[in-house]
Length: 262
Image (cartoon, rainbow, N blue to C red; front, side, top):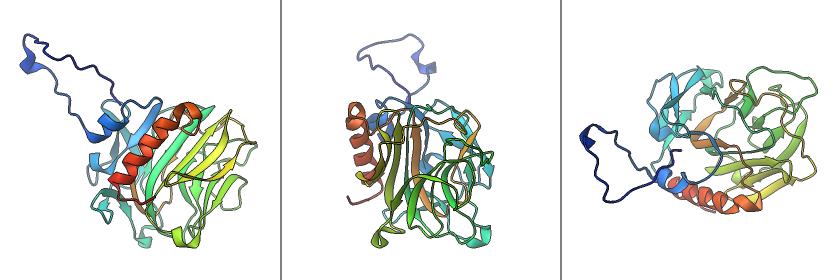
């Protein structure tokens, strides 16, 4: 996000050659939130492109490791990254942000309308290099049948790997459009939110990341199926009391933008 100060009444010589700042709804509502690391939005991407705009950084383009952008829309008309065809081998675009994540405090959020994947476990975030070593990896996902949201421990893309936190998704919520948030800090431990509701937590697991969190070492959306809207990573724990206002602002904006009921 770009922070700026508006000076009313200022006149600058040669102003016709200055760059123009476009005020977007996201920038005006979310730009004040501290800790932005990565923020992607299908409304600001080009179909079939091989990069995705990181709106958290000015003019930053993130490479796609696999596939190309396909756009669709949610039921309310908001644009979505799209993959709904199992003939694709269960593969979604894999986006590789060149950004280091705060190992001691982080938040990941995404708007999803998922489909089951009979080919591979589904991941929101996973290390680009897998390992079964004794590590605490940046690894978040959803199982193939949509019954669980999971914070994984190591870097293996397999359903049998150790789990740090799990939310058993009720049957009537599976496959519905939702805002999902994962948060962590060494003060608060791990939490999962569904449409702004705290649905799972493990305050005793306060282990910081030590694998797959540095620039180029993690990727988004591996083997994910369905529709995906705005998604992002912040270098703060939005569940902490000091950041609660920012979390509520983010939740309200995303749920209104994508027509999600609380």
